[in-house]
Image: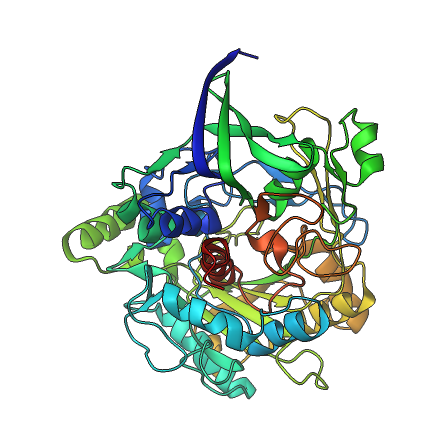
Length: 536
């Protein structure tokens, strides 16, 4: 370890340059008198794959991620499942599939009514969704048009994606042009966080316009070691950059936005968390906060894969001459397959018919083997349909491997621990298969590659879900907001029992929202900025 090379003072020091961190840095630096430092462990978003919508398929593993795997999943055949978490400015919004969904209003009502998150009902959070959203198609009371986060329609959905939406209608789902409108249920084409045929991450939409401000400092390649405390008062961060230690002092507040895996890790390394766990690793306890790293909740997605009769999906662009053609089309005309986010189509539906709101979400991928750990097809031309239980009951943990900040944490989502999750997951696979059997998709499908014909009974579907399910990249709830003994932050996102420190990212969700999580995380960043500025 190098010596401390510098000590600098700011009003706000932000640990983590992901979706929420970028929002906070941009909003807090709007006040020219506020000195703001944003620290990100990853690098700048210079990789061209980040900015091409189709690049998602190239980034679920590799240098833009932390390279995590889960602990062996005891309810999923003891598998260690690849667990993609972004390590780049913009966080998940720089490498995700760009799907823009906000969850169901009932999710936020549940937070406020049942889970101790006062002032986080849908009426409370909707203004922040609208403030963030720059939608190029929808407007009205459910949509914003002028926000920093570009949201748009996919310019030219793939033929197989259109066939998927038609097949869902043949199955009995209504067509839904807007999953963020009055009703969530049905099938349609996802809107994506893109603007002018390029990804609009939080780094692009929020941070880039703010970086010219003299009161905002953004530093990448900075691994946060720990939060510095005087008693229970947070006074700054110790971090490493290029092997040397630095200290950044926070005169106002330390803001932790390292995500549902990174934030509890930083808190525990700093002596805040379950006291016994910290003592096991020789960490001095600053404050015994048992909920830190508990309550990990994630969507467990299960894929089915079909082989096509011909090269009618995005897979054909894996061949060099087609790839060059697609690149040329994108460069010259900002059109063609590079404008696709791969995960073009989707649906919200019911696995349990007694559910009042959809409890399953489907993602249609116009290709096979696009993500780390997902099977391809022998011919190299296929399509994939993924489904997951929207509000899983299973809860897991994030734990320290050691007291060394360079060590990866132990991530155990505890997938399928609750029998209800397994039952609904199996139903998602069964419905997926039925959708693939509808006439519109049968025009394209040669055969179902996975699951095989031997998967017929409920037990078969459950065994398949255990064998092939994986993360949907939506970890949350590990520093949950609330008022009970296991809550980590209060409804103003202040860490309980501590001073001058807030956690402001997906880790504070009291429970997982029923959709993709990026829009909700950006909303949390927006509301946090107002809470910090005293506007709420």
